[in-house]
Figure: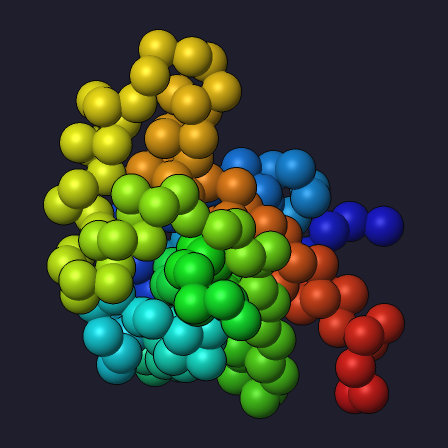
Amino acid sequence: MMNPLLHMAVGTRSSKKLEFLHAVLEQLDVTAVLYPLNVSSGVSEQPLTSLETKKGSLNRAKHALQAEYRASCAIGIEIGYERDSQGRYSILCWASITDRQGRQVSAQSQPFLLPVYHHNILTKDLPLGQFVDDYVRLSAPYRQQQYLAKMIRDRGPFIRQAIEAALLQYVNYGQFFDN
C-alpha cells in the first residue's frame, strides 16, 4: 500500500524547524509537499507556560492552513518554557496539526530542565535566544557540556519529539481518535 501524499502548510519559515520537520517526515516515511509560511503564533515571543506554547502551535497551524489554499493540512511548531513545582524552568515544544476535515492533534515534547544559567535569564524576563550563544562560548570544553549547549541552542530533540508524536497521531488518526 502506498503512503498518501500530504500537502502541508507549515506555520514557520525557520530553517532549523523545517530541517527537523524534513528529518521526521523521512524517518516516518511520510511523503509531503511543504508550504512554509510566516504566520503569527498569537502568543508572546517567549511563551512561559506549556498552555501558552500549545496555543501558539495551534494558532500557527490554523493560520497556515487558512493562508495556503493548496494545503490539505498544516503544522504549527512552538518552543516554550514552563516552571516546575520547584519554580525551575524547563524547555519544551508543542507541535499541532490541523486539517480541512476539522481533525486536530497536538503533541508535547518531554520537558527538559534548563541549567541555572538559562533559568536566571528567563527569571529576569530577558529573551533567552540572545544569550544562548554566550552559553555555548562559555561552556567548558567537555563534550557533554558542548552537547547540552548545542541541544538548548538548536532545540532539536524537543522539536523532533513533538513533531514525531503529532505526525504519528495524525497519519494514524483512526487508531488514536474516534472518527
